[in-house]
Length: 405
Image 1 (cartoon, one colour):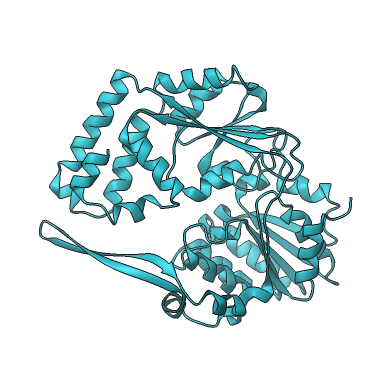
Image 2 (tube, one colour):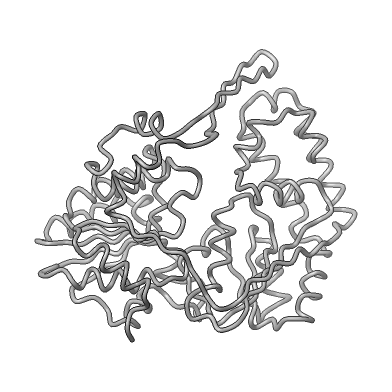
């Protein structure tokens, strides 16, 4: 099968470079382009393919792995090894094993699939990948969300390709391209200063530094996407637990004085308290009166949700936001239910693009379950504004938060 026009353009744009970034929208066929680019380089004797672990070893037996995708498009012309981001960050043995393989290769080529996974320079994952990148002349990064949080996410990805591309420190990058504001909070005897980005500048200069190495592409399909918000009511026990947790956290001055992590804990427990309220399952049953269960993907956040969903809806594909949202090709499904809410805009978008991809033949429908409590509405509003939970909590007082929740 011939390359699609956008894939041909991607190959032509990056074929002259030894490093490159495919910032192609989810579902546009980045893997196919990566295979073409790697196979166009002579004498490569080792290909290292690093990706989220669940794309290499899917959690469900009927889901296509990245290995199967590569084989489907003809495979690589050189030996390839697959490693998960998680394995390299959690296991020193696996990291050293891969390092030795790259050292022994004469001309290795490293592919980083879902490169937005490297964000924090202090994280072991980022440090190890940047170390491995120095050992290879040929490198390629792939992602549909290069700036999942903010523009700062771009720098470690460019540094993986080569620190010479941007040639500046983290502080220089931030001060050159980001506008940011500091907010001082007084919580009892504790004073806390929070900093968050409010805008960007000098973007033309940034593009002049790295634009040669980047190919960007949006997904354009001749099918529709339809979004429906499905309302449900919490049962009495879940609603009582929700408001009990709200009072416990927001009325405790000591907890409030800690830091934003207390909000992470608070909202996590509040959402978990009603994750399996009966109204949610009733809402899903109503959805399945209109769309086939076997053509539906359901995303969950909590283990309790997963177990109950698998029991009640065995024909549906049940996947986790945290472990299954990246890189999977699920064009055989055309309906998506967001069963549990999450704050992370990137995960929501990634979830929608598991079905809305090149090769999809049907319109894609998305159903977002929203409960009758303030936290659900708050998450909806912040997702629309692409604002993370931590960013939101930096700008709101305890009094305002009580009113919202």
